[in-house]
Image 1 (tube, rainbow, N blue to C red):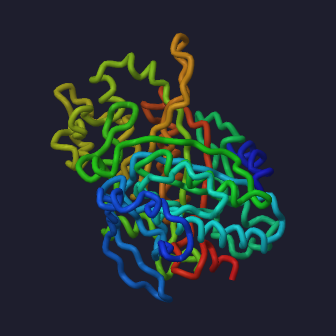
Image 2 (cartoon, rainbow, N blue to C red; image 1 turned 90 degrees about the vertical axis):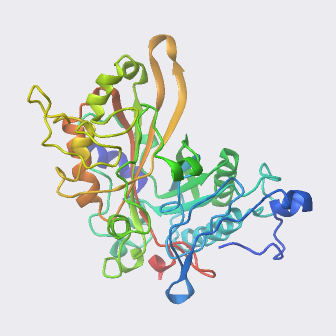
Image 3 (cartoon, helix red, strand yellow; image 1 turned 30 degrees about the vertical axis):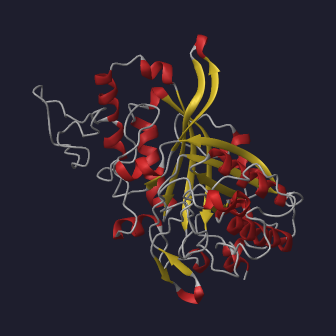
Amino acid sequence: MSSDSFAEAAEQAPNSQSESSGTLSRRALLGGAAAGAGLAVGVGATLLGTGGTDKAVSITTANSGSTVPFYGYHQAGIATTPPSSILFAAYDVTTSQVSELAELLRTWTTAAGQLCSGQIVDSDDSGETIGLPPSSLTLTFGFGPGIFDERFGLAARAPENFGPLPAFNGQQLDLASSGGDLMVQACAEDQMTAFHAVRQLDRLAVGTANERWGLAGFGASAEVHNRETPRNLLGFKDGTANPKPGTKAFDSTVWLGERDSPDWMRGGTYLCVRRIRTNLFAWDDLTPADQEVVIGREKLSGAPLSGGNEFSPLNFATVGPDGVPAIPLDSHVRLASDTFDGGATMLRRGYSYDNGGDTMNGIRDSGMLFLAYVRDIEAQFVPIQRQLADSDRMNPFVTHIGTATFAVPPGVGHGTWIGQSLFA
């Protein structure tokens, strides 16, 4: 489905390059003194995958000087510990030639390997990150439904039932800030590093793809993520129930396995994007106790209202002295729980955003860039979102204003490029 038809559908629905390779390196420009100042490489364990591909296990980034390998069996930026900044960009492909689309992906792959290893792309690089370390930069790429329309002859290779999300109650979508044929998720501990990466990919896409929409977000550093569950703009811990990378629960939630279809997506995943505007002024009018009833957890500790600590199971049978369920029937955590969604789970990778606003009149464009990684959109994301859209006590405080879906292919080995098996 092309991006031009996205609005119609929505309305109808209720590897690191060597520094000796000749490419100018940011780190080389810093000189020996800076190199001795701690530009350490924080690399996690890897396993050799099939076909010479590096099969990456969970990578934990350590600090702004860390480098996260771009090449691996899975794309980085999914199981990788989230750093503090994101720039998410969606693109419309402007060419109708499949060869030109494939060439863009080859070019982007080479550039991404350079950027993630701390190098300047080429002599036309804008240079704003000269002198900066790699900052745990990850670049993640995906294909929107439009890639599988009549333009490129790829319809027969489309994942089954892959398309835009259905309409949900209460959403007020800005269609110009939704959809997209291609996506780039740039995450880093330094916002300038994420911006620079997307800026270079934009430049390399001229004549083949144009940025449709983009959004910058912020959150806790990887160091905080590794120590405790970070908080969102509501002041509550966000991500307590996430599956842990390196576990069977994570793999079964996120990655397509060796028997899944289509074959070119094995080792990949699907991404559902939601831009959620939050009425912070109305939220701040609630007492902390009232906020806890909306969420279903204690604000300070993150423990469920049924008792225990942050990671205690949600006990929906617990009632208070008045006989009322301790975790309200319409609370956010209850409706998002796999207990009431047919066992559906997802990997939440959310970032806060703020575009300012009119504080005198209680209007501010702030909220969450919500990223949900799943193996099956229909079985995992849609049931949870439908429950929340229909009954969540949080609904008066949030409005979904942007949406998109992407097929995120597996990672690449040296000498291959993103999505190559799709075009085989």
